[in-house]
Length: 239
Image (cartoon, rainbow, N blue to C red):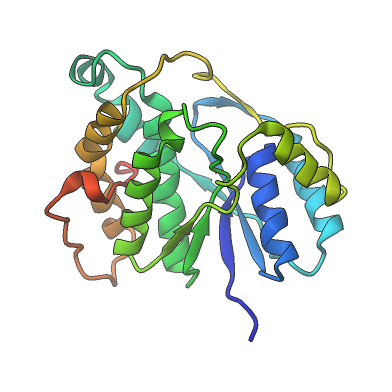
């Protein structure tokens, strides 16, 4: 039986590219999702990586690669209350965590509108110091997706080093360069404790859920879990 489509949150970077490679090699048809958030410098580099992937797996990459606009939800989640967020969450810069939540919101809406039941990204084990790739964040994203009957997967979570990712790309005949855009907030933060990450996501979950519900008019209103840290987050602000 043919496996269902998987939507991969695709940046053009090594990690999300290897996620695509692994699905394609498992004969799973992949739908690439790209995003615009206003927090990065526009680049054509992801287009180069996409061309590499299509050349390597011509039958496994969905014909269209939508670019999802997440400006509104990024502002609502990550920027609108930024001063209060710094005061509330141990003075930590969690803007990129808010951006990642916004991407999950936009991707979830796309999946629900297009009957895609599996959503994945390039979260890896070797970048677990990043707030958005922490285990507590992964569980949060997983539970939110599950709430909307979507399975969230992290196919390269087992990669313990960037070298392992490079080898995987090389074996598939792809460039080992990172072909992704540049975030304006990259390398602007210090380590945040798991509790701080969990508190931040919990504080944003209602906004995320309301955004998704608002953009899926036929769907019943969602139930929020009684334990906010155990799952649910995602919304993207009213565009």
